[in-house]
Image (cartoon, rainbow, N blue to C red; front, side, top):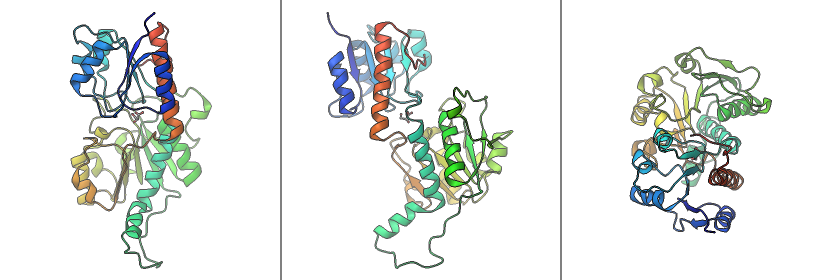
Length: 326
Ligand code: DGY
């Protein structure tokens, strides 16, 4: 009996690729370059299942491609804003994602950015590497302490709450959060810290937070949620952190806000025009820039692969995938 055809759009951890090759007629991406729109359309005609990543834009045109064979798109990642979900639904294609398994590592990275920006760690590292450091002195490169400061979390899903727990227990921060809807907390371990308070409005949260960390999904409603006006509602010593999706911030407005000292610093792991980073952003000493590393650990990328495979297998077998988005 012929095996299902699976196209894998990027290079995956080798143990995951080995499992895919064992189970399926697998088309792996050996040189790890992103698929073009044409290659994605071809994949839709060739494969029963596509295992894709955040770097693949899967549009309505892909879901309506003539002679489409694809029945399931299993995303390696939790965010699915790169996939036209309405078109998938209309076409009857199953879309899955990989929640839970990347929560802790992504929250850790948000915490790292909070520390890096408030304690000027990127700047300090560059200073030492450049050979400019002349030794310890009492007034050198002073940052801001986080203890007792207020962290404002925008979006209080699994990752937002994991950041909140860490900020309280590891940094001694106070936490407030804002989200348009009540969070769904399925187990006590994933709840937010006891004393976290809900801000009445996003504007109130921005005005009263020392650090603002974004943890909302990318949707039409959250595009440019942090625009010029909202940044101006933050205090001048405010720090903005983004480990969610790039276009939640209007990046040109961010450049302006940093240049005019409307806010004090920013820590970014994701970018509006990813993988392009605005050249102006690279010039600021008070901006920390990471290359979308939120879930980038050996353990988590393996777990994401396992989870994507589990979803793919269920859908191809006609069973209900655990993480069905559409
Ligand atoms: C996610 O899971 O959404 C990460 O950003 C990688 O796609």
